[in-house]
Image (tube, rainbow, N blue to C red):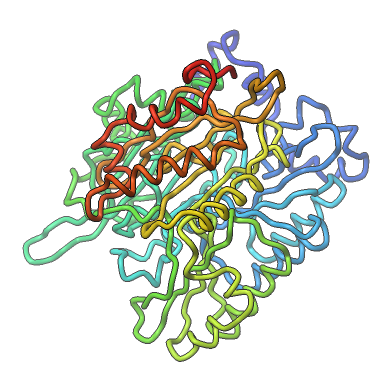
Length: 540
């Protein structure tokens, strides 16, 4: 490892100093010992290192419970793996699972005594937790329809697996300055959310006489959290066999030159912003050797990670069916029933989406009618209503130690109420976040809600700050934050006003993002202000 950053040891933050003495992966070997000695024997300083095993202390911190994330690279899995996940949830996680915005599954209520058991079960079915958290390459996201997608230029499953296997448990890259997120997709509708990842590969083509040579463009330096950045496209064209080489090079630059003084300023996006595109590209090419310059960009839109409905695959006679899993919350029984349907009507193919939903693949056309009649498919309907089907939330304070407010139940109630009271002929994406971080990805939502606490009539209550107009489409841009915070009980009224304004003033086929761009945020600020304190400057 390049030791440049170690020379400035006195400037490292405390967690970096801990990581120098104890690699995050070392904690994996100690988990069996903790199983015998118990939660209380885990050094509080080392509890954060459990993240390298995909394990995080659940709220409240001293209760001895953990959440665990399971990687599903590009969201591609099978029914046997789904059954394993469901049975683990049933036996060890109080019967619930959550889908995440990175195509992973998340358990809750695990104890240190059963974590080694769970990890052993998962490993037998090629399911992995190591690296799903921590300062290392995280779950590789991508196109959940890889291999069956009429809108992809290359089947990326082999590429994703190659990159995944290289970084999985690799100690050369287990001590990065912060987390590192990779996206690989050739779906032309940006299913991999390229612009909000540290490193992303998107579909591109080169013309060689009469032939089309398909490959990738490269985006670097994206990320959300309190200070979001859109990733920038490098002047590179990468062939499929070069994706791993470029991934290693970008991760190496981050490892060796990323910032380690302040964890809030340690993501790759800050290094990239300071270096600039030209310097970063120059340093990258020193590691990779020559690469071709950009080709023709094939991305033509953004589907926001939604695949609802019944659609033909590129394989004649087969279909994929996109299911709505409200807020990404499933019971073990739900997942077992989905797995049964995947086997009964298809070949067991199940895919997870960035929108926290599921897709069943390889369903013969003659089986569609019977599949749609199944009870679980009617509940996880392929044709959801415009609010319940397009509302996303983070975990919230039910399980997360960082969250200030409850999000899951709030978001579901909000979406259900809007579906009952508001008619809208186009989906409206509402994202709810429980803290200043961005697990709920509110910056890319049509309407984002960020939880906070404030005073109302002398009492401390849950409130939400609003933002509007986010998109990763052709005119990508983050949502604009409005001034003030509105009490949780008034959010529904505010959104009804926003939606009514949109419905009455929009142009034909105009998206909410384009509408906000045309009218500006001030019009929405005027609608919000009557609901906030102190003329829109609510106390936090």
